[in-house]
Amino acid sequence: MILYDVVVTVAINTQMEKTVHLIFDLEMQRKYNMNYPLMNRAIYYVSRLIAKQDIKGAKYEDLVPVQSAWICIHGVPEELQNQCIHFEYQAFGESNEPKTGFKFKGTDLARIDFLLLSANYDWDCSDPAVIKFLQSIFHNCLGNSNFNPYVEENEDVNKEVLVIMKENEQYNAEIETEKQQSREEGRAEGRAEGRAEGRAEGRAEGIIETAFNLGVTNADSLTKMLVKQTGMSEQDALSIVRVFLKNK
Image 1 (tube, rainbow, N blue to C red):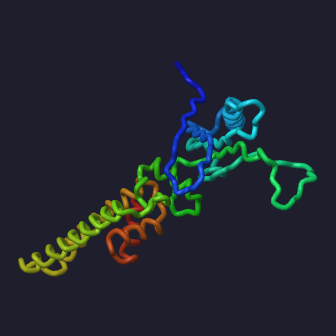
Image 2: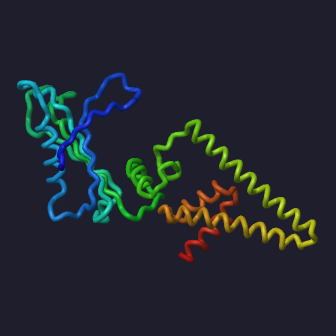
Image 3: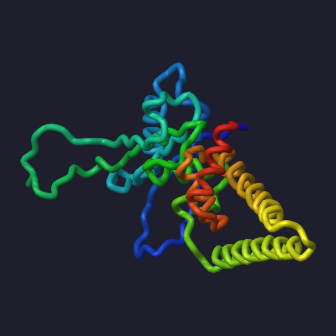
């Protein structure tokens, strides 16, 4: 059995002092380039959700607005990729009503948002926050504030950050211990430094590899991330990034 237009009432815990009634329709579209205008389908879906509402008598003022969001990632033309495109009713023509602050009632009854993504994504850009948020979902980095702009610091996040920082401190301490032990064993200082630096570079390359696989391909973004994660100088980080990207 297939059920269409199943509307579920959901209460969202927010700080708002009044209740807002809204029908939210989320459409995960497999591809954008269909053999029909996708906008026609969106208008049809929204209209159906408006028309099926149970209103008493002729109280059309009780109609609940419908907001429909369409997420597309494949088949989006390059010029439309990573954009939010909004559609809503607009009133045209002349009116005898006062112009200041006047708005025709009902024009906010329907809104359609096309959230057009791309399979390959460069995080070093000025795209809307909602686009970066959706891309962080599809690239499996939702909890990383470097990718998801909506990540808020809280007690749990801060604890996790402290654990990571402590691990980094321990790692750096191990490197220093290794250097000292190598010197004490009579090895040349240059060889000891090179061995420890080799480990540090290997760790740095691992960080770059992970970020690159998540879609961070810009040299400047990778360099800044590496400096933040390892504490190495920007010049050293940039050198490692350039070698990594050259081999890709």
